[in-house]
Length: 47
Image (cartoon, rainbow, N blue to C red):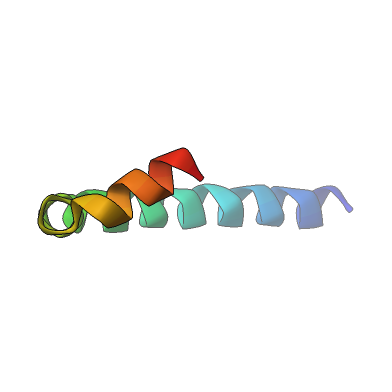
């Protein structure tokens, strides 16, 4: 049981760090997308 929880925790950490790396890698592209589509970003914020 403890081994399973340890595995799930380490998997969650690795998954989260992978997501953060992916986010920072594509942050400039995302900002460029929002800059080109201000209406979409406004709808996303107000929703």
